[in-house]
Image (cartoon, rainbow, N blue to C red; front, side):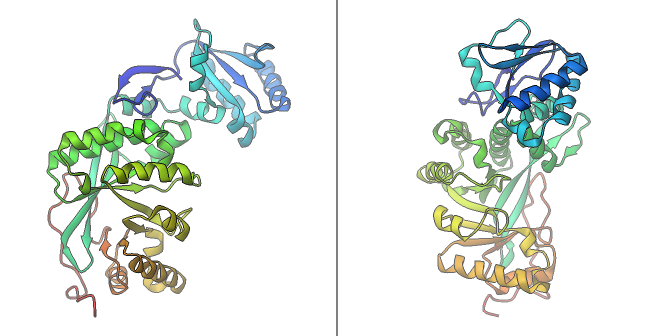
Length: 374
């Protein structure tokens, strides 16, 4: 996928928006096994798409015109298994270009290429920087009228000015292999808008470990944006966002070491779901853990959830790790986590994400928030 000249910072992969796949060109494909190659050759012949096998480089070259892009994607998706799509490597080149050695860093899986070819709307959103940040307050459980921090949450904006749900944006970016660019832009936009709104409390910023190759390079622009905004490093909490892939622990620890050495705080997001577990807590030693909203939902009515959540809160307290109960939507959920020692709470019961951020929250409880010893 070709790169455009629009950059956000110093990392060419993380901070450069790829160009759309437009016009005539060719795909160079390398298949995991000969059986996969034979299936594609047979399908291409039936579809009357132009191709040739390059014996010297052991790859298949498929000529792609704009009209044939969707046809090829549909053909490959129907003929190959998910595993074959992930293991087949592909490089897109314009018609007048031949691959050079330094082009191969752009090669990707056939699965990512197909998803990328369906991502024109997302590439437009990134190149035009049509994203904004909403902020959701995190409050003291002992007194919900006291805002401790704000979590920065990405929102996209379509060409009509409507908000695009973050779930749609991140799912498409992940499948198309452009989570690097999205994550980098989301971080810097959150920092810039926090400065505009004059947020003085702590700022929680999500980041995906899979979006960072080398911390010193990929995160340089983020740190620069924080410094330019005049925000103290001790006011920034980086949340390790849940990923659909198990974390590479050595890589994740390297990223968090970079953040800690720069004076930032660390939070584990979605704790209690997916790969987030007590072993991760031991290895990462976070300053905060955020209990997953699925654990919190109706925790007062579910003895299984209650036992798990209660033990997590006990362990965190003994390790002097502060806890945030996420997704609290009812007084019953709030009372349950408060009585069991959650340090902070976040959710629609307190406030929805907004822009600009809210500055006052309610003092809530059945009548009033009781002392923690109650």
